[in-house]
Length: 263
Image (cartoon, rainbow, N blue to C red; front, side):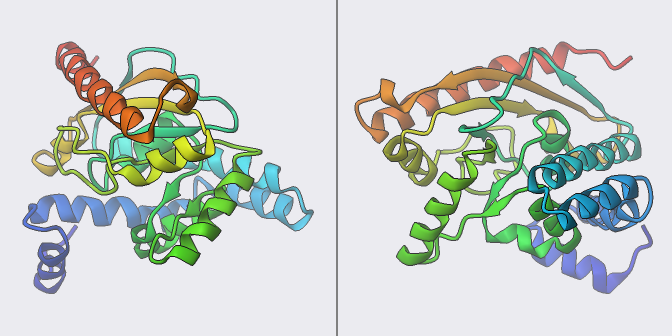
């Protein structure tokens, strides 16, 4: 991507001190969604729109979910990277929240590639117009926690959506920009506990490397299984357990990825 001073200044302003090289990569990755929608991913677009027009909501979602793999494969090729999935990640088809660590702007395509489920995202995703449009088309929801009324509506929408799918959730609540698991926010864990929604936990490693190196990276995933809120006496106990679990298993995943060889 050409060096444009105005664009570079905008990148610096929005990436909180991260390198311009990383910012250019993020822009390239998300701008390519537009090209893919009308290129390699167009068959999924056409089939998805056709199924939407005929009232086949589930068919539409499945087509757009499948289309996200095209984006992910494009990112992997663009960055000459390798994805390692170290065990079987069998996310339940519906009724579960998928807790996953949130690193930076680069993890969306990889999460789409490995997990391939709709997201329960915050308002920030709306800034990525084409990616946001595709994510909504594949059944994702934006969880609005700006006020009590909007939270209540978002919870109702979540419960309704869980009847047919499971959602990827980032319990840290924001990008960590590090391989370290940050403190989990109580919000989604309390909702899971109060609504008795089981949680499937997975972890990823290596995505933070894009902040320093924009190609030749290794990304690894590890599934940790399902955890039922009924097994905990309070949401605080559930949060403490998941915090310890994710932090300890993340160290194991980091070591596994470090030993993995790119063929």
